[in-house]
Length: 310
Ligand code: NAP
Image (cartoon, rainbow, N blue to C red; front, side, top):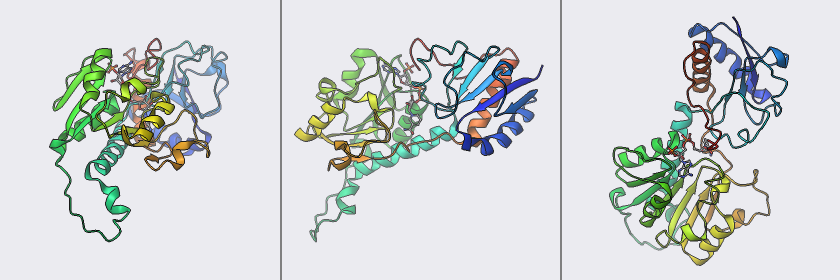
């Protein structure tokens, strides 16, 4: 039987996704009808983004699964009208983009690039940076994006540690897990990268207590989600010099309000949630493959555990 697929991402994404998804579904031999305007009771699958038109899933009475185009699912997980399986986006484009962004911002700190970019007022003060092997970098969250970033940093020679809920084994990365592991992961970190999901358990992972576990002057890079950091605690730690600098891509309120102290802070770099985005061509492959799997009775990839929130 033909699977009816409703595209419910941002309307301006439809022209790019329509041909790619149709081609990928055809390539995989999935008998499917893809549209952006089905009657709810006829829909089998929803290709979903929180920026799209759907917030109530109740009218979708024959729905089999919802496939999120976003990696972070904190906006849809609490939606009680969604009762079918939910998958999140894991794809090579997202991983590549995040790895490049994380490596770039880590190298900025590691090499001390700002001193030269902003000029040294005519002072010739040669001071070569240390080698990566003398720099400790910690990645909080060792999922798809954290693991890809940690691997790339380890390949550059950094001393990389990581932290996750369950214990991991990653070549070249010292892996810690659970509540006790956080202290060990932070203790040596010159640079901390947050790639955790936004869940009740990860809110304020960096707070006054955990910021105090870091070496003085540590740098923070947050491409994960805004609620992972207690903003007041970070501002206090930046003010005291306990934290040297923060590069923040994500915020509790986005766009970051113009009056927010992060904008003007001399030791904060704000980027507007651009660390990595879902790329249509690689995302279409994952979405089509998941629909093929479900239609064939095979397990869905990247299923969200809604009790954990990610
Ligand atoms: P993922 O594969 O689900 O990985 C999440 C990682 O966090 C896992 O290693 C998980 O541990 C760990 N974790 C979850 N709860 C934890 C807890 N309570 N304590 C310790 N570790 C915990 O997610 P992903 O694909 O790597 O993406 C990570 C996040 O990046 C997304 O949720 C999204 O918010 C963000 N993101 C941002 C952008 C951007 O442009 N800024 C783009 C894409 C994604 P286990 O491995 O043990 O499960």
